[in-house]
Image 1 (spheres, helix red, strand yellow):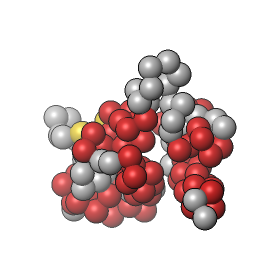
Image 2 (image 1 turned 180 degrees about the vertical axis):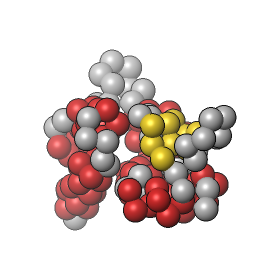
Image 3 (image 1 turned 90 degrees about the horizontal axis):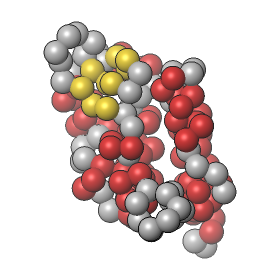
Length: 129
């Protein structure tokens, strides 16, 4: 297993190529791929924002706004307030920034981000009924 197999399973399309309608599901899929079980399955490690095989000079995916479909679709969507139209902000009245910082620099666990994305998805589904 490798970064290529991980991408095939959890990140099959670059974040910038995802539609607004699919952005939440794409982001959730990516973060589920960052659990310890899935990293181990593919032989990968997270070193802060860098997802790689863990050896020097191996390919890396940077886990930040550049690989986040929600950020790519909604961060710059409106002139003015960043994230204003992001489903996370619209559904929870808060951004993902604190949760992201914890996942990358604090606990180094994707659990809180996965929970935030799942909560957002449920609230979005409820509001569309």
